[in-house]
Length: 272
Image (cartoon, rainbow, N blue to C red; front, side):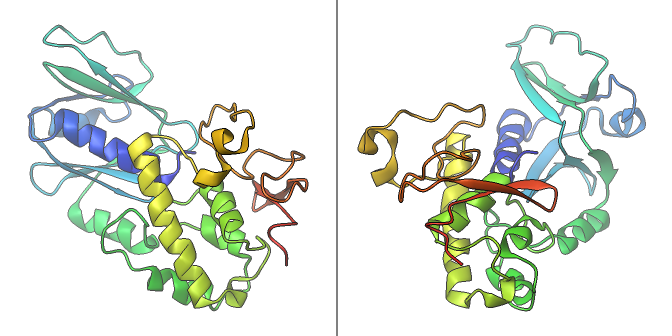
C-alpha cells in the first residue's frame, strides 16, 4: 500500500496537470459512471491529501475521494493535442483534457462525496506530518495513554496518518526505539523527535518520489558498500533487510509479524 508521501505527490501531480481546467470525466469500467457524468466538463479546482486519502475537488462542494488500498494504481499520460489512447475496461476513473490524461485502476475507494462527508473523513484520521498545521499533540494524547506498542500505533491511521511500514520501521531505528515499547512508555520529547523526523523524511519522499532514510554518513558512497537493490527504491536501515547486518552495529536485522504486517528492527541499536 502506498505511504503518505506518494499520495501527497499524486495530489500535486493531479493539480499541476489538470488543475484550473475543465476536464473530461469518464468511468470506462462503469463503477463510477453516474458520478463521472455529473462531473464531466467541470473544472478540477483543487486537490488535497490526508494520510493515504486523496481528494480531487471540483467546482462546487463535490469531491472525488480516492483510497488506493493495496492494488490501486494511477497512470499519467501526455497527448500534446492528439487523442488519448483508448482506456482499458479496468479503468475506474479517467480525467482528460486535450494535452493529458490520467487513469485510476483498482482503488479500494473511488466515491463522490460532499464537503461534509469529506470533513468526516478528516476528523477520523490522525495528524499527517505532511499537512501544514496538523498538530502532533493530537497524536501524543493517544500515544501517551496507550499500552499498545509504538510500532502498532505508528501504523494506526487514526493516531497518525500517512505512515506506512517503511517509515514506521525506519523512524524507530533512527531514534533507537524498541518497536515493542508501549506508547505510554515513550517520552513526549521522544515523540516530538519522531514527528519532526517524519516531517523531514516524508517531505523528501514527496520531492524525490522514493523513500531514503539513511543519514549522509551511512550512504553506500560514505560506507563503501553496495547500494540497495529493491523495487521500493531508496536507502534504508532495516526495512526488508531481515538477516542482513546492521549498517551501524553489524548485528543481524530481525523481522516478525505485528498486526498482520512485517516488522523490521535491529535489537542491537533498538534495545528495550
